[in-house]
Amino acid sequence: MGARIEHPTLYGEGAAGPALYGARCAACGRVSFPRQSFGCEGCGAYGEAMAPVELAARGTLLSFAFVRKHMGADIAAPFAIGEIRLDDGPVIRCTLADALDERALHAGQRVSGVLAHNPKSGADVLELRFAPEGR
Ligand SMILES: [Zn+2]
Image (cartoon, rainbow, N blue to C red):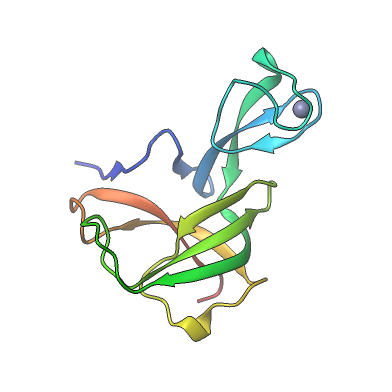
């Protein structure tokens, strides 16, 4: 049995690695994430103006924070959350892969997405995480 994606409406396995599911405005070209059909955040166009697009899970790390104590049972601390500007435009927040060394992270570095098992969830569940490129 194949692995299940934790949030299948937000991301999945694309042709060239993990992809995030966004929408592009046909009127002005602005890309939004998550995918929605309410209307463009930039120009206000709505309805069919918002076309589904797959966004590459690649971008630039803008900032990050380490979580050393976490009360939830969904993920084990310590872990890091990063704010990432995707190459396609939107800024997202995502868990960073593994228990990263603080010295291995810096604002401005290239990061890309991986679909990884979270040991705290079911063994066959994959979640999107970002990791520094070239590690
Ligand atoms: Zn627009």
